[in-house]
Image 1 (tube, one colour):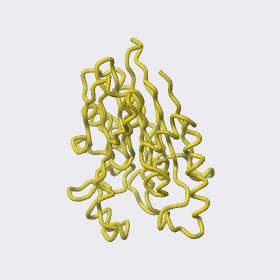
Image 2: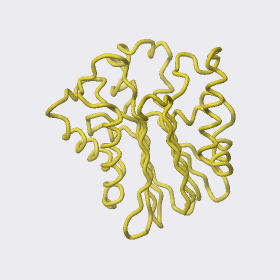
Image 3: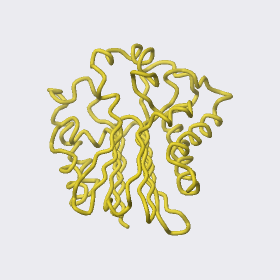
Image 4: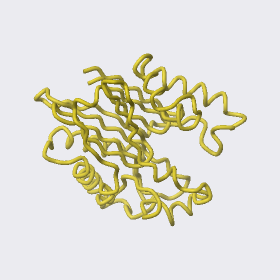
Length: 262
């Protein structure tokens, strides 16, 4: 097995809100990838004393531990338990019902000799490549399907769309959100390589349209995760003034890539 992990903040003066980990059980059989993209809240009250990196670190650590040790748990069970465990650590000091309480997108991948199990919640991406080279993108596209008018203001998103039916879901403080995730299982023999990416890295395909998911995977496999992030940074900088591609989005976003050759 070969792994390649790069995680870079969008702004060197701010903490990275992403989290990534590769877990390997003591038995030496199988493994997992955990990827989180913390949701940057708009300026103002969040109801929580803690930062987004604080939250993603604790949720990510809980996910890694449960994914490695809880072989009898499904990825949805793991996410539900990790959200509950993390919420308990600050429920006494924070208002976890606030719509802007710290939250994150989630990718969980776990493999054994028999199968590859996965979970994707919100707009991070999981790519699976078969031994024949065919790439399958596992996406939770609910946020992408919303009309731009629905995302016009942060207040509108908070009131009508965030963690609500007809909107989109993220991992915050409600364990039941795990049932909203995209989940599945693929026979192990059908997956030769996989990659998990936050939306700061998928910009190469989704924002700048430099190639499809297969093209993005080719960059990872041939040139490495560092090369993909560097390419995204150059594209972001080139569009900083014109904003033909970035629109209202921030110029540089936290970008994290985990590539695994099984």
